[in-house]
Length: 117
Image (cartoon, rainbow, N blue to C red; front, side, top):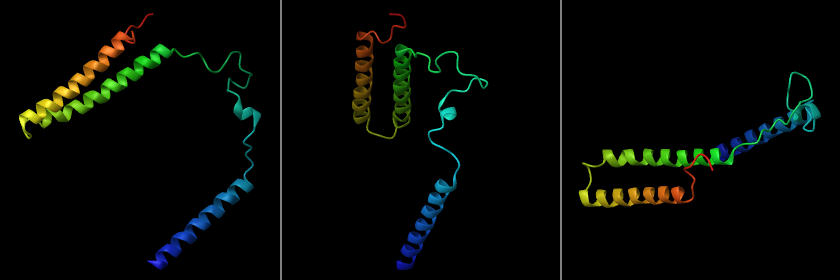
């Protein structure tokens, strides 16, 4: 055990020495102006590299991902239907579906499901 610990410690020290040497010997500069600018065929950019992003589109995407994960959680409920007590399965399924519907109602109430404002 002691030998294993000592060998691990020596390997970590050697790896850190090599990492430190690579940073010292490297020609790369972290503050290189050319690497910080967007590339447009060698010319200075004509417009901003970052275009404005629709926040509403982002929220629709997040809502889709949430419901997609919830659908993935419903599949095991279907496969366990015959393996567990019906009353327990019904209570858990009913609670889960109610939570989904409450979330959907909240999103509908906040007008998050309307694509145009």
